[in-house]
Each structure stands twice: as C-alpha cells, then as structure tokens.
Length: 321
Image 1 (cartoon, rainbow, N blue to C red):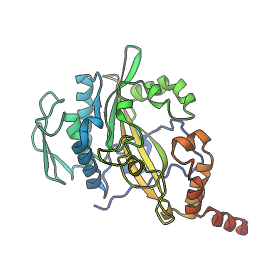
Image 2 (cartoon, rainbow, N blue to C red):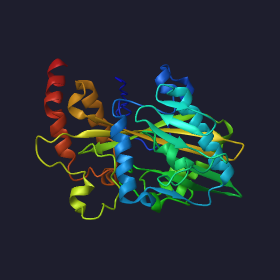
Image 3 (tube, helix red, strand yellow):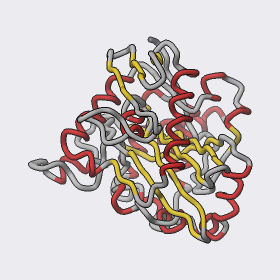
Image 4 (cartoon, rainbow, N blue to C red):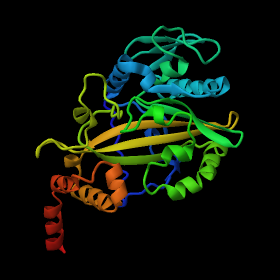
C-alpha cells in the first residue's frame, strides 16, 4: 500500500471558521470523492483505537437518545462504503459477517443492524468504526431540536466527547472563537446537509508539536498532564506539524439525521515548499488573538515563524522584488 493524501487548507493564506462545505462528489480525484480513506498509516490508526479501548472505551464512544432506526441506517451506509470503496480490505462472507482482510479480523453483526456478536465491541457501530481511520459522529434532528446522538472519537483534538454528547450543534461549537455568524444560521446549514444529502466535505486545521492522534483533555491514568497535553515545542530541533481534519457530512433525510466523519492528517512544516510556508504563516497571522489562544499557539507563534524561516523567505522575496 502506497496511498498518501495531502490536504493543505491554509493555502489561501487566511484562517477562517466559516463552514466551507463543498460537494464531495465534485472533486476531480476519485480518492477525494470517497468518504472513507485508507493510507499507509492504517495500522497506526487502528492501534490508537485499540489503546483507547484498553484505557476506557466509554471515554471515547458515547450515545445519547440514539434511535435504532438512525444507527441502523448509518451502519448500513458505513458497511456499504467499506465494501465498495475498499473491497481489497473488506469482504462480506455472508449476510452478517465482515472480514477485515488486512488484519484478518472477523466481525459478526446481527440481523437487527444495530448489535454485534462480540464481547469486545459494544455495538455494530463500535465494531465498524473501529475498522476505519476516520472517527464518526451522528447528529439527530427533530421536534425543534438537534443533538449529538452518537460519537466514536479516538483522535480528539483537545476536546472531550463527554462535553459534546447530547448537545445541540451551536452549543458544541460555541467555545470556538469567531463562530457567531455560523451559529446564528446553523439551522439552515443542517437543513442543507440533510435535505440535499451531500455528501459534503470541509477541512479544519491547526498547529501541533507531535503526531499523536489522541489529545483528549484528560490524560490516561499515571500520565502527566504536561506531557500529554502537547502544543509546546520541546527544543529547537523538534518538528512542528500542521494537523488537518478532513470532515465529511452525509445527510439521511429518511431518518432526519446526518453522519459526520473526521479524518486526521499530519504534515511536517519542513516538508512544505517556500510558497506553502508563506501561505501558512499568512494564515496564522490572520488569526485573531482568541483563535491563537484556542489553537494553543499564543505562546509560541514566534517559534513557528522561526521554524518556517520566515525572515529568510521575506528577505529573499524583497531581493527578488
């Protein structure tokens, strides 16, 4: 397997919290039209999910008033996508048996489309998402309310699923600076996602000082918070990364719900071209003070500038000008 994906959403040189959703099917490349993506790091992502389960799966996988009809529909969609997009990875042996050919794991689902025959997995949703590099959430709408009904998040980016489960879309995003405009009109956004089905794709990004997927705000037992937290360069030679989330939204009007996938990527800033470094710095410079604090960049933005060698790039640009 030699599949690699490269997404650099900062290349317009401006940081934004706008929805920025675009139809997934309009992408030129087939791989970018897929909801699920598997690459060379597949086993590392599955290992991370395994470690989360060993620590406490209920810290990362939660449900709230989850309707059987909703999760049955989501499970069916995930299963169909896995078999269609990655037939070389997944094989359906009979009506309810799914084989992961990469690690030889056999998943035995039940006829109700909700449960799983396992002492290891909590549900069919748990079993299916545990085969993917993506994290998956499910939003339910109805009776003049919307809420996060299920979330399976083993790569949290400094936020806890327990703080979000059961809450409305605008409440979930309220801590994010500069989201007021989006939150005021979020009902229209959700309506578009569900009624137009999509799928839609958007990207979010930030700066990281490690490639650890799991940055749950509460560290595992016997782990120092300062070591676990990250977002602090350790030394001049330590790498700095752009952490990118590819987020897909798939609407299900028949159940008045939508599925939200999150796939995390890391890119070492030293691998960027000169122009990419310039655009990254421009985007960081465009962040508000509140956004810099939220992204954990406020205390070491100058360190990033040094790592990008911005002074030299600016000098070179002035000479060429």
